[in-house]
Length: 100
Image 1: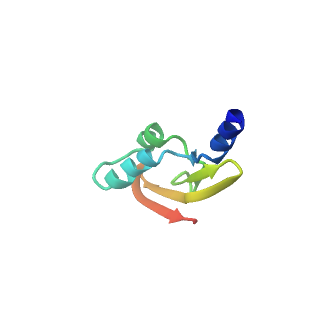
Image 2 (image 1 turned 90 degrees about the vertical axis):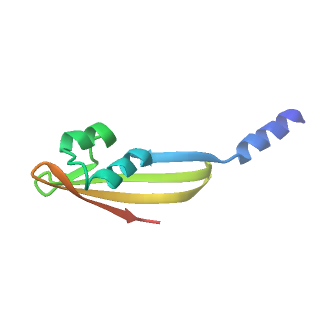
Image 3 (image 1 turned 90 degrees about the horizontal axis):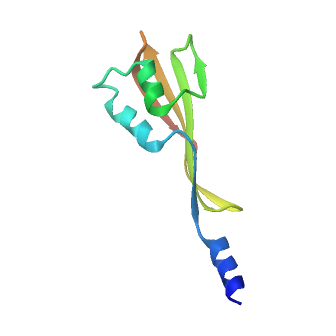
């Protein structure tokens, strides 16, 4: 009986699942890019390489999402696409697109 109760308890517990870049690292760049001239190398050091590079390597696209729930029934907390635009190797624009 105790084993069955433990299995049910663990199967109903909520877990958190992350995919893509770190929310904390992205927020650091988003909040500071207008005051700090981040180079492409700086961005890679903070949040890693982009998922996609376009427009002569001046538009970088990242994805991030967060879900909670059990493995079979996950609920999306957020699902975002992030666009970073560079001019002369310096980050000039950060755009966040919510896909929820």
